[in-house]
Length: 79
Image (tube, rainbow, N blue to C red; front, top):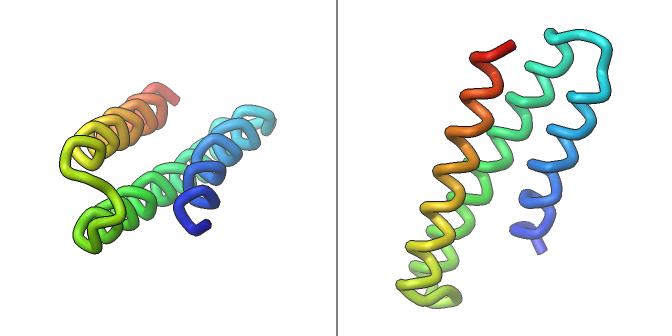
């Protein structure tokens, strides 16, 4: 599914960027990972509006995605 692809993309880009030899490359991959996190958040909102995800699950998942986005931003700032 699109949501699974976006979720896998987040961690895959962080891992690939961490394996690069420069902060510049790592920052580029972190930007892609953050974009995937926002994409996943959008897909979650749509899924919730279409009643594929209930209110309580949507709230929990959205909160977790916001935390992931903040962690990626913090990592970007640290480089």
